[in-house]
Image (cartoon, rainbow, N blue to C red; front, side, top):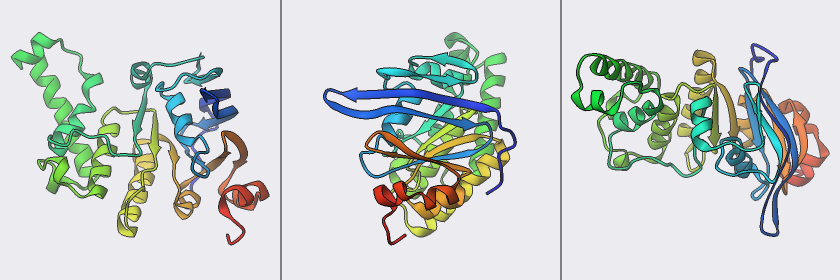
Length: 261
């Protein structure tokens, strides 16, 4: 895996704790994401990985700790603030508008980029029309990039799961994020679909320069794609380093990988 272009810290998570009633999902978790890297967060089921992503983009508010993104420190963030600030997200379970086409789903990702008011949009005239055409041009570029031209007008509910995942990635890319959060992008995929998605993740990182933080259970994928890996177990960070360093960690072997690895 190539090294990140810079050591600049894009996201810094410091001392984050989160509990639901008596269940402690995260306990004093700290890590950072460097600009330009692919950063993996791994761990067994129930380790707190998705909870961590939900804290980063504002779905959950931590009980303590801070999130610093692009130099601005917060104790909590609202989802709309995260989106406006440059954080996009895909989900464990595909969250698309099933009756809408792939094209229209990806266009939905451009919503925050719309500058003309509702009246201009209704009239579709002059500056508003020019803006819409520019948004469509950007979306068509993403469709070409993800190699989904053939299904651009197909309702996504009729698409196989692997293509739905690709459309969801396209919608996130349409937001032009600085940080892309991927929650188990390979879940439910066969080997060929995993290979395709792995290629697109690397291409997004290289072509767009997008910083990526991902959760993934497929260890071969994680070790192949990632620049650095953070490991959670029962809400606690037990390891953090390069893929090779993490693979050799006895704490990781005991908690997650198993001795057979």
